[in-house]
Length: 68
Ligand SMILES: [Zn+2]
Image 1 (cartoon, rainbow, N blue to C red):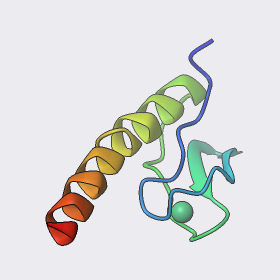
Image 2 (cartoon, rainbow, N blue to C red):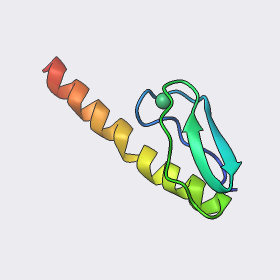
Image 3 (cartoon, helix red, strand yellow):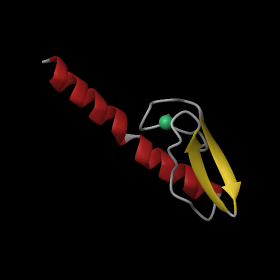
């Protein structure tokens, strides 16, 4: 399934959950970051995962720059 949630792009916590109150969205329980509100669950999860996926790569790149 594509319903798996990516870790939070801000704090890297895996404590993220899907929510639904009129709109569907994903929220991080660790730092409070929220994905965009969507009209269905699949879109909400896809939006969260899109936002989440590039961040770790960018963070890793920044860490690499700091180490060097
Ligand atoms: Zn977070």
